[in-house]
Each structure stands twice: as C-alpha cells, then as structure tokens.
Length: 261
Length: 203
Image (cartoon, rainbow over all chains, first blue to last red; front, side):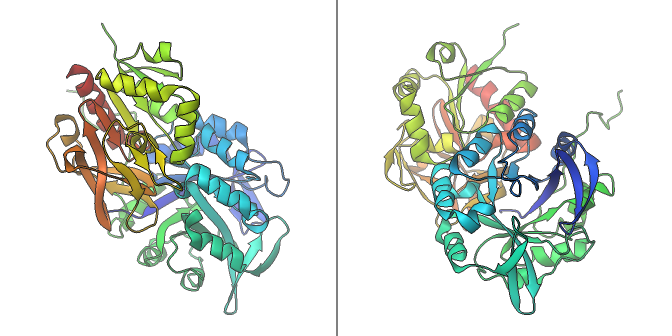
C-alpha cells in the first residue's frame, strides 16, 4: 500500500538554514547540510530544501548548495525549491542531485517553461508551490516575488489539472511557524480536489496532522521549524502518526544498541 | 582479496551520488562513466535515470550506448536499470510520444492506470521465486514515476499496488529492472541492492 509522507522541510536564507515565521521573521539554525543529513539519518520520507531568497533576487537556484547536498549521497529523496527561472535551471537542479523540483514564479509568468520541464523531467518530478491564505470564502494566492495576493488564476489551475504537475505544495504562509495553526480550509476549499496536495505551514500537533492525512487529497505533510525544537522529532511524529498511513519510523545510528558480548 | 566493481552509466540523466554512496557503503568499488573502455572493465552495469523516456533514449543514442548495452546483454553481463533506467530496458514507451527503448526485456512502458503519478513509499511483493529479491519481500521502497512496465508475466518478478498491481521489479536472466529508487530507500534499498549485486556476480 502506498503510504502518505512526512516531509522534512529545510528553509534557507542568505545561505543559512533558518526558522521562518510567516514569511517575515527568521532565526538562524546553522548549515543546511547538517539539517539535511539529520533528516536523512532520522528516516524522513522526503526532504524539501527551499531557498527563499532566490526568486525575489532573480538569482536562480542555489546550485552550489545543491551540489553540496548532492555529494552527501543522501538515501532520502530530495526536493529542491527556490529560484527556478527556466527549463535549464530545472534540469540542472535534477542533474545536481534533486529528485524533484518545486516551481513557483514560473507558474505566474512562464507556464510554457513548466510544460517543457514536465516533458523533459516527467510530471512526477514537478511540484507546484502555492502559498495560500483564506480571505472569507476566497482562497488567495501570494505572488512571492511582489508580495501581492490574488485569487488563484484559472490558467494555472488548468496547467495543474492537465497532468504536467504531480503535486501541489500548499503553504499556509500566514501561519507558517505558528504551532498548530494550519488553516484546514486551504485544503477543503482548494479548487482542484482531485490533485494530490502537500500541506505545510504551522503543522506541529499530531492531531492536526492526522486530520489532514485522513483527507484523500492530502498525500504528504511538511514540517519545518518544529523539527528543530526536540531531538528525534521525525521519529516522534511518526510514532504518533503511524496509524495514519505513514511509513513506520526508522532510525539509524552509528552506535549499535546491542551489547558487545 | 577481489572486489566487485560496479559501473554506473553516466548519460546525463540525474545525479549518481546517492547510488554511488549506497554502493560504497556496501563495500563495492564504483566507476561512473559513459566511456565504453571503462564500462567494459566492471562486473555489473547500473543504468540509473531521472527524467522522461524520450530525452533519456536521445542521450543514450548520442553517446553510442544503445548498441553497446544491447551487446552487453547478449553477452549476459549483469545489468540493473533503476527507475527510468528500468523503463529503458523495455522495447518502447508511450511517454509523450512513442519511443523505442533498449529492448532488452520484452514489453512496453505505458501510463499508470490512474493516469496519476505514483509517488512515495510502497511495499514490494515477490510474485515469482527469486533468491536475491525474496529477501526484500514486503519491504517499503521509494517510488517516483508516472509510467509502468507492461509485458509478459514471466518477466514480472515483484509487484506493488497503486490502485491496480503493477510490476515493480522485472527480470530476464542477468538483466534486472527496478521501478523504485533503492538508492533513495534508506536501509531497505541498500540491502536490496547489496543482495542483488552479490547474487548476480556470484551466479
């Protein structure tokens, strides 16, 4: 049976892994490689590295970081997000070690490149990022580059529905970093109920995660900041959610727990 | 002491560090190359791949590796295809357009029945006896694909279920295709790769 996934999310700003709060406030955590290696060792189902200052500066993906992460020889699938401007950017991200890529700005302004990327990499490698917030009954989509929210454009929905994109990363950006605050209306009111969704932003409480995982259209949940507050967070979340379609908890250590007899 | 050397075929589709890391962790020597003289000198060939079928065949053709791989298969050298590499072993694919493959295992690559991508951790069940793969029966592995193998039952060794059952490992003698990513499947993937390679080399 196909399991749902717990995705460990690492946010990078100015070259450092950070905790992010509502896309406004940031606290440094350390080197990206350290966090990614830990998630790999702890048995995350996927690792998503999002570099949040590349789109705004139009500086392209952080290829140096990707190369360093690729060379770690991770045993966990790696998803890369941040600054993908063109087909060649996306292809290079995969060549350097990403298994899948997230497109955001391209969805707003260059859908032909999204289609071409899907043809070259396969739809399974393509994830659409949608930072969303509810305003009354309307779901508003934040354009990360200019900070303006608008209703979700129908041509973007058409593109997603066409099968060029495999999953949508729905980020509750208003509640990102706030414990237990993910707005479930973003999922129940998402315009395409048949499209697989990854929910992220303010997810810290197992009961809330469980409620999301019970929804047919939620195939994964992403956790970022809250992995940094306790040791072995991935295992603890997995233990709490094992009945909710997640793969069993996995932990690898360099130190044997068996007595040397 | 003799080491088993595994050759990863580098044809520009994806990054090979994870496969290399898994193989090193298992104690194998690894060469990554598209050069025939280097690939001739290894015990097992691995054809990895992330991407779409037509681009991958184009890349293999450009490097003159299609004829080479077909010749190696005739000479019964062990070949393992991973994910897209597994699909390339088939006769043809319908991904975006009809494209002929390496034709090392009879069959075709067709869209998944659901027309959706199959992404995530899923269990593999052995449906035929296979000494090396049996050890991983029931384990979970990471899948990331939108197309599947369709061909004669005799080549379908393991299957997984995503709405309908589909082949997750195919085999024709010394040629094995793995639909999932063992190199991205943590301990379970490493064990499967280790057993498979050791078994193929010692067969």
